[in-house]
Length: 223
Image (cartoon, rainbow, N blue to C red; front, side, top):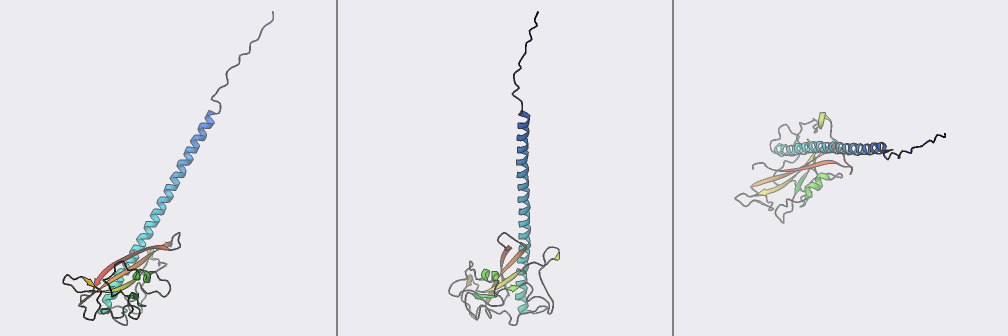
């Protein structure tokens, strides 16, 4: 008797290769998450770096602002300072040869007289940012002890690439509720001064310039 053999054909398993596909999908997700985490970390690092640079620039500008106030005091007291050749008195010595809307070589700016002081004037800012024939004062120029060197130090006592600078604008205050006026005369009873200071950070940004901060304050010598 012939024996008949039967061959049973099983259906092909559809899950062949599914594990590989799932593994690739998981790997892709993990890669995307890792890339996103790296980008977030890099962004946070840049933000911390920018904030650090801004803090350094702010401290430098604030130091220059206080240095300008000491400059004004040295002009009247003179003790312990390398005071100016000509003491600050009223509007004497302000402006380039007394020209309105300009600054002298030693950082004394004279506003326009034809109008009340313009608080949006860019004369002081332009003088602070000028790199050729600067019309501003470097930190410590008129406030250090004679013969000494005084510079503003950054973190860990390091020198900054740029020393903070300031300019002084003269304004006149008549009091009695009249406020400030542009009438600069020898009889001005209460001249006040607007100090504008700028400070820079340590590192240069993408534009090639370090972070900068500008501060202003008003000061009166009380005369």
